[in-house]
Length: 284
Image (cartoon, rainbow, N blue to C red; front, side, top):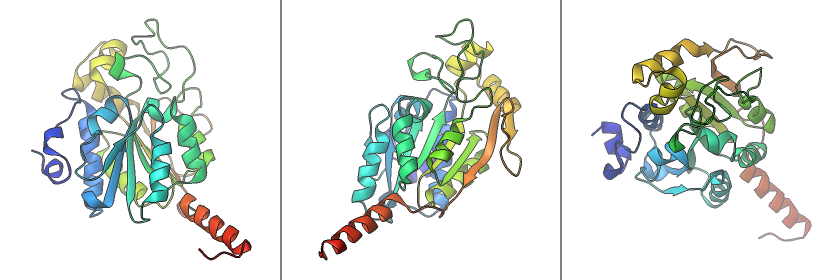
């Protein structure tokens, strides 16, 4: 068994539900590497999961406390936990692109607006691969998929100058990054930074589904083909402001870092409650 998996995960849950060769297993290990580098143990972190491939791979694997949410609702559950748990307890959520950027986007934006102390890792496999490979809002334009046999045609969050991380940034997030799963060291460093953020943080990690997206959109269902395609489309962010029109491909790097610029949600709420009590002449 992988040493990190043996240290942090329930043995019956490894290597997990991901297809052989799937980048999700790499992502799972990168997250564990970040946790280990921070010196955190199972009692230091609560791990929440959502629906889809990412949620299934990480569901109830953590040796510590875990929970799961239905489609798009994991952020609401995590917000309640953040209010109930001690400040030093970390909350990590692993979700897919659907739970992050489609059905879950309103709840995610609410958590970012409030600046709730949560870390979200988005495993983005560019569509709804767990149900057969239908296109989603991060599927590259023109992709042939199970639900777009003639190619995707409607705008997504990654084409024509649109970038969903821009929306999350404007909503009030404290830390945002995007990498591909093949950029191992960068993923680990960003997850470390996110877990150390006192506020809302999100790391989007693009990985390829060779079983559906590779076979349908690329015409080659091998792991090597999807990994080569990802490498060819990786565009590192340049220093300075992000360009108004995004280049084709996956713009990777630290997208936004405003750690400490805004009060965290639970701190703001407790200060508000204290002020209300003071005005009412109450001390407890």
